Image (cartoon, rainbow, N blue to C red; front, side, top):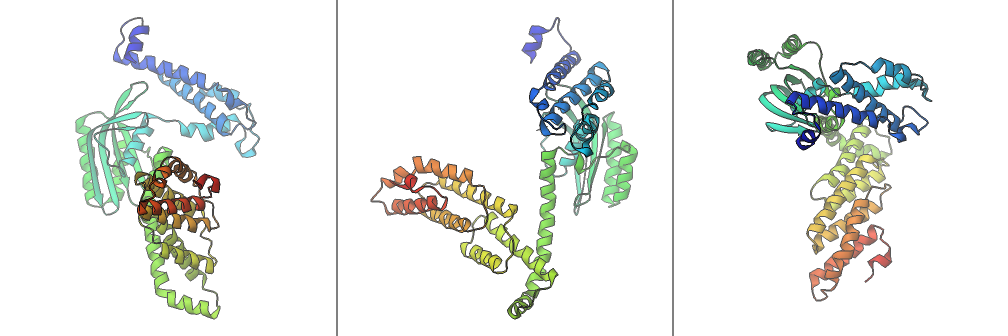
Length: 418
């Protein structure tokens, strides 16, 4: 970047001027991207491709406002609203812009709020990168009280493309489940930050969380951010973390109910009497979890898995859902990776073969393309070596189970023959 600027600039540029040049180039890049032709070859304005090119235009508008001080948005929207959607609820281009493009725009405050919220769930290093933004911590304090957490700190954030950087104060409060609130503002001076951090810490230490929120409003203003403010990938990761404890709690509660009333449920089943809906729901939930867990655990108990699957068939419980399919795919991928790392392991090959036989008999079609690709690679590179070791009993055992695994994975016999 420095070489480019020194080659093309008419004179030596200051650090601030370099930022302006890079912003102008970024504006020009998005002005070209917004004409991406594929976005305009679709018959629906709210489609993925068309919304994407409108997002490029939206970012060009953002940059023009920032670096040139020109507000082009209203004129753009006056033209765009003449483009009509085929879907009544989306109306026209202006509506689509406000619904899909405007919320996707990223400001400095949004970026810092994302960092503040995610730092409640991630132990960041002093320097870290999140997508195209770099963060350098000056201060950071994380306090916990049961499920509740408070983080407050200052960080210098830089946008890697334009090299622009700003310093911010942030605070984020987590009260369990999905209850997260965060606030940010530009850093002014050390004294101001120290006072804010002290007041927030004292109220949090007293577990006076309403007071903590009031202090955040007083020091930062009423603009707050929540889990909705996170970048999508990070949002899903944090929600998964939050939901994992929720799922565990639900599992424990339903398991207690099921274990307590199992004798009664078996007695009712023996009489042919329908189970009360609440009991059936709890028992079905636990059985589904047990089957999923067998695929997620490190060492699957084949006998226990078969018993659980037989129970599901006998009770006509529909456990054959996307969650089970995903768990099966991940389990088989992990096992095939282990087999690639330990070729010749007959016991492992037999275990995968038995598991594949079970999966083949299920009314479900998990995504096993990676498993089959890895098997095919081993079939071409590893199998010939072990086939040649005719005097080695361990090698013969491995070949037997490896070929049987190929049958369970639906490989044609001609590929498995010598």
